[in-house]
Length: 364
Ligand SMILES: Cc1cc2nc3c(=O)[nH]c(=O)nc-3n(C[C@H](O)[C@H](O)[C@H](O)COP(=O)(O)O)c2cc1C
Image (cartoon, rainbow, N blue to C red; front, side, top):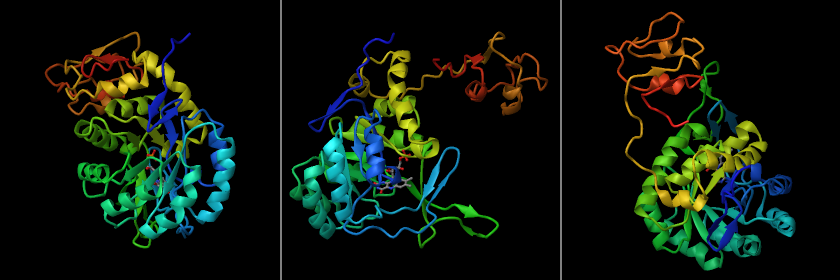
């Protein structure tokens, strides 16, 4: 029986039962999707980015690999009037805070924000395709709503700290960090062309592969802005990932690619896994973890590898991957040659049975 681990987050004047939200994307486009996610144990909901007119998206537009997603989607393909009808129905039954994602021009905001305002618990503003001055953008949208306004940053924007400084001093309530990374390209070698892309051949990259870059940036933003509300987003795929992001400084966590690659049920898996991972890592509450701050002194010990022969299955992976050939090449119980071993940690991190310790000394 698990102790009472507290997953509740109170922020922006709202209460989230747990810190996990979907991120804006196709999985939160339209009524059926939002009602389906409302029925899952998520802490909150977010919509696909809404603008005045539905976007005309180049098709195909999404490619998945084992640990990343490439996309060249734009905003919602539905006009805002259709969204108003959808939101009425969602708000009638929803049991959790709803963030409405909006874009892009001042004229768009003047048309849609007053109409969407009754349905929003907070607004999230995509700046991905926005070349406008951030100050004007924030001032415009905050003048049109009484709800919290979170500005979503894209890694390609002028610099994260400058972005946060500008939007917070212009009246934003917090930030969402980050949108997909890029631009990048996906190649179709046979056709000597990009496989998907915008008119310039660009795609945007998300999913587990971007997590380290997102964590670093969130930790940096949190260090400079200890008090601002931050929704972390990018590369989360598991409860452990989400808790890592909170340790780095996020108050809430959004996930999209982790659900595109594994299906919507991964939201449930992540939320249901939170208490277990909190128990394993002695985390009593989300709030306490968020306030801890990520230690930047490496915890690995850098000793020689020690092999637990009761766990070792003689698979030979350590010998295969060792950059210094410090393990014997035969598939026998490995013993490391200390004069060759560079104590890097690669073997310990790749051992499928966690039979190696002493280098990274990963807490298991
Ligand atoms: C197919 C796809 C569509 C997306 N559409 C939007 C969008 O409409 N608005 C937005 O702010 N972000 C959009 N994003 C970015 C995601 O919300 C998120 O910031 C990014 O994918 C990183 O999170 P993840 O690694 O959990 O996917 C989209 C991402 C993907 C993959």
